Image (tube, rainbow, N blue to C red; front, side):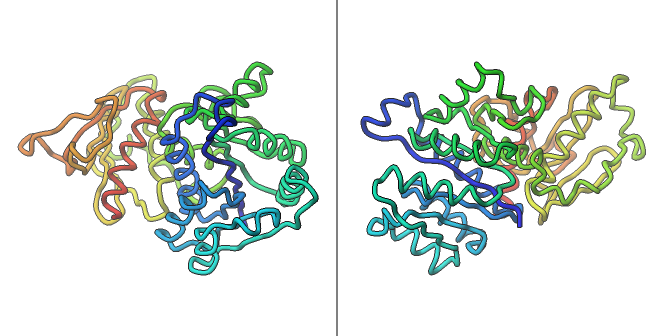
Length: 335
């Protein structure tokens, strides 16, 4: 079974001051994106049972009905402090609680728990926010599993951002869309869902669609809109990969002038236009979270596809943000 470890927490108090800046809303969003993506792709999610992260995992496990693929690690040092959310994950959602015997001190107990956790092989690990314990967790994991793929989400800040900064100065950090995939990879930006999905794909998780043939747009008459250096095809291939990673239920329908992606109905249609792609999203403009203001409303009499709004993709650098918009359209259809 594929297993992914999540190391995350919300800084607070005097210890939190040591890892400023940090952004609680982003920490919650990023941790939720990791948990949802891992569980939707059929992998097992393991984490240290931090009381601020457990409610997030509980909500997603219940929503997706996948509690049996959640493993919570807890030191017996905190036996009296186990939260109701942990018990609900175990007793209601079917999660597995693994308790590690306590040692004499808190520090020894935490180190023993981490070494017990990382004695089990992981396919990938994600780090979000946190304080000094996140750094300790990173060091033990890297020591015990030198080749495991570690992804650091930078924008939420906290200790994870400091670790990323330290690794960057040692030239031991690649950026997801900028550098070759390596052992430590920086996830930069706030389109957390698309960043995490891409990272999991690079780690070989949820790649059951890899054997599918990428459609040749020229075979369906769309080649007229692809420019000579094939940048349109490159953009389409990258976008297609991200969309199909959203959920196993997503299907692809190649039409004469566009490619549609649907679950129950179309949630995005892609129209090649030379060296860019025009996307129509089936979601009202007022329901979209679009801080960059990239999306345009389309009058009903001007539409020839199903989408209510449109956005253009002209660069791979825009891909994470655009995929996050697509994901909102998909989520609206699924709920």
